[in-house]
Length: 297
Image (cartoon, rainbow, N blue to C red; front, side, top):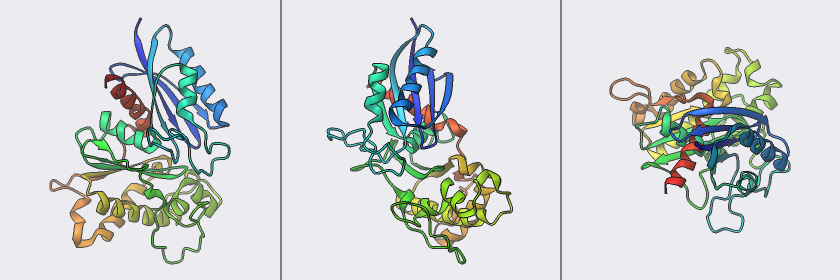
């Protein structure tokens, strides 16, 4: 009987599920809308079990939205902490998925999973020090330094850092905790709250992208000065907007100025601020890589 590893990316909007063989080939996948916690996990588990086709599931990886309690030994380890997602606070997706699949589940954040995926099989395969920023339902930042994810008492939350307001921007922000932090000003829901339309409905010439690129360039600047990475990877649904990455790089170069302006490109002219190599699958590959690593350990 062949062996497979399950991978789940839990986002605030959708849960993506997949099965991988032990060589890292994606065999089957499915997406479900994020609904009530227990029902969402059960739907994912049912798909995974139905799709194994005689194979044995030996483990699973879960890259989930948060914030998460990642302190091993904590009574609330694996729980989702304060979140604006109704019904999900205090829920333990790792434990729930383990009960449903009856295999060990390795856990990290959704953006942490994306960083692991890009290091495993994406644009950061040969990079030991980089930052992954995801811009979607929220804004998350993962620092991959010295060949591992950076975690302290919890995981980094640079998506909630403060930024300088762009001249003429009177939007109060929509973060329920901080109002106009970078997530409250530049996440997908913030775009919709500000303009009354989703980002994908706005044309490339819309003023929204001036605001968006300005705030995300500031976030990149903070991450560069904080972590001294070799590269910054910018992913998430909002980053699919045509021209947004180039706008960010132009503004980032101006913000860094002469102090660190060579970061935007390396000595050979190659960009250091890049899109994910795995597109929207980064976190799925990361969940697989995390599970396989835990099993090997």
